[in-house]
Image (tube, rainbow, N blue to C red; front, side):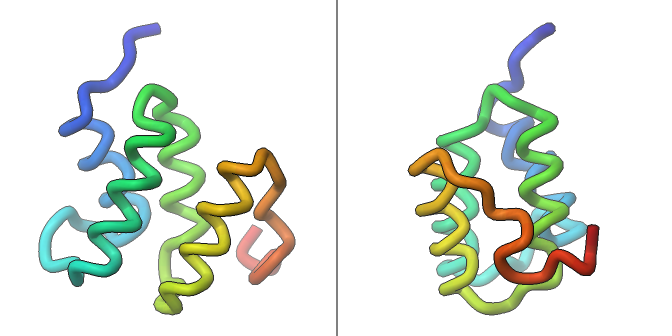
Length: 84
């Protein structure tokens, strides 16, 4: 399996998180890039994370999710398990 380039990883994540890659506020752009840099080589992870965070407009939830993932903990079930 080939790994994604950072640009491709950004496009993939942004599509799933925002349904587009443009017009995202700086705060969400910054945290998105942190997520992408942490998982850029794992396309399926980026898709799932983007899908999970799609529609969540609270930046603190995104930050909490990033902290939990970096610590190796599960984020599913923490905020809105209904979407799954």
